[in-house]
Picture (tube, rainbow, N blue to C red):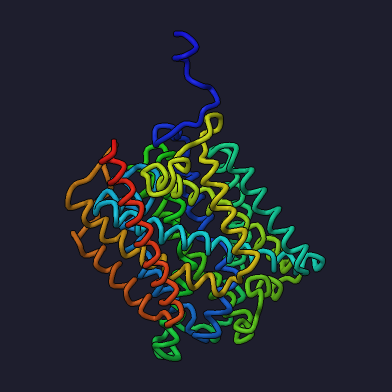
Length: 447
């Protein structure tokens, strides 16, 4: 072989084959839990208590009944479509490029708004621990440093990123499970109700569901790097279902303990999980504030890892410039996709706040969940499969139908402003898709 034919050792590599499958089932389970247990859990108990009173745990039970069918659909379709891209690749494989582009773009919007919202909340948590970080300039420098660190950890390979996520998941989940377990012995059960009659109104329950779904969301991002998962036909279903069940138990336990320890004061708390821990043992309040910071950092880490692969997939298939579909030759990571997603989230975090961004993210992700549920039914009906025996949904279309109905009921509770934001995004996405589609058609004719 002469120099003219020898491959360039520093040239960027393209396509799915350039990725390496090094993420195992345990790391994938940790990644799913890491993203789900992000910033929402540290605000949700107070918000649910304010809306639902003593019946707040019922909202989590209702959310579990909605999210478990969705998780089953993700497990089924994720075991059949094993390339990088998550919902984008799932919908493209089952309903064609437009459905895939729509799901992928909605998910990207949901993910960088949720990343920005959690980063903004993280800056508030850190400012409570270190007041000098509260002013605008130190806050901006803090957010800049956070995103630079996250980018650096991801830039040195998916293996390092996956290990960092596993460590962060262990650091934040251990205190939360301990609080839920130990706190159960101190619950005043007179402050907790599972009776439907204790629900203040159906409107209150509906409004709380959007927040619950935002808190439960995240598996879709963790499953995006399927092209880097070992034995995805087995790992994806197991990781998805185990993680969702553990998260449901954790969230329900924390809500019950908070409700049973603080009572009506829970709804007025700015840091409900930390205040619950402090009521049991004062030094634990600081520990849980630190845990909140670790948790949010872990969410941001997993969000960047997963979403950068979604952007990679859009570039790989020509819906973004082809340069987004390249990976670095040394560490096999999509550097441009990492940089763009981190940059967008960083800019939005500087200007936005958690509450507004969470509502937009939650509404968009419910739409994605509905689309993926229909895609799971179609993939199973067509017996779409790659490597290994796929996970089959029992009951035909019953589980996907249940998931779709649940998502429709939840998005029906969104306000006019939230629907307007999602509607504008959808119109813009359709315009972008049309422009890119025409460009590809013309390019094909000129070839």
